[in-house]
Amino acid sequence: MKQFLLLLIILAFNIACKKELAKSDNTESISSIAYTNAKAISIPSVTICNQTWMQKNLEITTYRNGDAIPQVTNPAEWFALTTGAWCYYNNDPANGSVYCKLYNWYAGNDPRGLAPAGWHIPSNAEWTILTDCLGGITIAGGKLKEKGLLHWNTPNTDATNKSRFTAVPGGNLVSIDGLFFNKGLLANFWSSTSFSITAAYYRRIVYNNGTIQSFGGAFNGDGFSVRCIKD
Image (cartoon, rainbow, N blue to C red; front, side, top):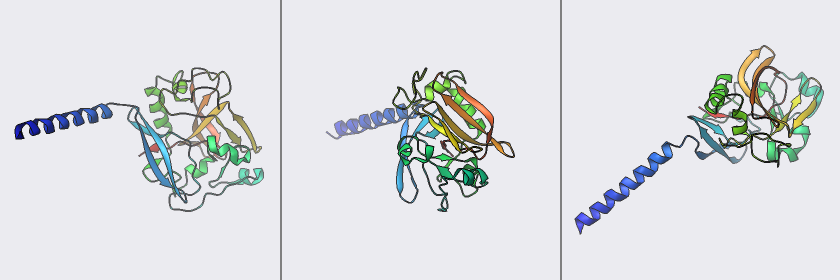
């Protein structure tokens, strides 16, 4: 009887080990993280080729140290900023439930930390690693986009969301004129990498092809979406 019980224990242990190995071999697993933004918020994450990304756009209103990030709705005030701020697309809170918040680059570059502890704003190089991992600039965007036409405008070309990144087209705020553009058409994501004194690199995913485009030169005051990557 003792030998039989011992065999059962060994068998159970081996099965558990195999399950853990199968999990570790999965390059696109989903987990959940939590951070504090006046209250606890659970944010899903996804691991893609050894990088772990938030699976949802950032929606935080305080820096890591607890200081408030101001919501700015006045176009002239937003344009004059050289410090961090956020807004909803078209200054409409209803857009926040899907697209979350738009931030200027100053918020992401603030030493108090826009990203929660253990996370950071991805560099231009980290965006490139993600793009290369998913097959390059001509097809990676399709693997990052949410499928279907619930949020993306037709035709949402090549959208498979194979990576489970689930990019949504939150559009952008153009700081120089205070106008909002491209909801349903584009997803623009900041990087942490400067392009010049007044501009930074960013990534763009579009509705009518499967690319992810890399640009330098977005004005630091523009309002873009933010995705964080794990440290």
